[in-house]
Image (tube, rainbow, N blue to C red; front, side):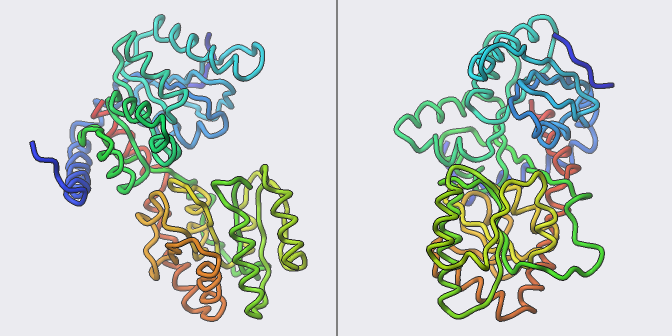
Amino acid sequence: MAATESTTTSPSPEAGSANRRSRRSRQNQESATDGTSRADEQRILVVSGLAHKNERHYGPLADVAGETTLVCLDPTYDIDSANYVRVPEVGPRIVRIVLLLFVALYEGYRNDYDAVASISLVPYGLYALVLKTVYGYPAHLGIIGIDLDYHANQWYGVGPRWAFRQFDVVSVPGPSHADRLARVGVPDERIDLLTNPIDTETYRPPETDIDTDYEFVWVGRFSAEKDPCRFVDALAELDASGREFRAVMVGDGPLRSEVAAKVAACGLADCVDLPGWVDDPLGYYYRSDVFVLTSKRDALPLVMLEAMATQLAPIVPSVGSIPDVVTDGENGIIVRDRDPTTFAAAMECCLDDPDFRRSLAANATAVRSDFSLERASEDWRRILTTL
């Protein structure tokens, strides 16, 4: 289809996690026999504001569903097998976000669908619940991170936790998030995993040896939750130990001027580059030896998976579902306290023991099979079978 535009006793957390993994294994086997036809017959309505991220999140869905229609704010029409319904260009973005609900309601009225899918509770997941209430569509919510990591723990968290329990399927990026979702009251049978996929054709080890320019690369939004200043503090600790290095911080955001000022104040201007925002950090991955993540809060960061797929050793905090992917000393280094001194010690280890760093990097590339678009399609097929 070408893309078109139209108007008893509660189990322990450990037991719960084991049960979920066992159930998913059985479901994978069952979907190989009868799940395929069931998924291929379904018409799915997607409510989205992800724009350029639609292809990565919903392309694998479109590959397995019978028909996929996206109601979205700023479609880029990247999914060839999907239909698109665009919200009219009326007023500022906040007006269009509100209008998105009414466009989705009209689309649900004029066409029949088997389920509605969304990612991120506010507002898209809430809109999916409205469609469920009005038309009876089974509803899916994909939690990427902030809904469960932040909103569910605030003073108003009773609202998000209640909302999670209203969905027919809630997907999360890893078992750690699945366990936390169960603890806020979502029934186990409604919890599933949805791979946060990367383009493994693009993010792969270089075909030839490349002379790297940087020992360390940091990639992300310069914002409080990503904590870029923590990386600068770690570099300052490394510099104070007498180590020589070069580092690059790729990205932009509200803390950019603060980061630049801190780099200068720490005397690191000659060894830290700040190139700003780039559309694709692949070139910087190839030019670096180690990827460093300093986030206070993260679900399963795409940049970490991309860096690992390109054969970089990751130094990362123990937040979100990261420990589900990175095993300390095997395919990366886990910094459990996020202290700059601990980050610097991990970075020193990679500088002082290149063989160890190369071993971590080689093992890191296993994410290419675990987080492929094909794996995400398998997850969507299972989710549709549940719906």
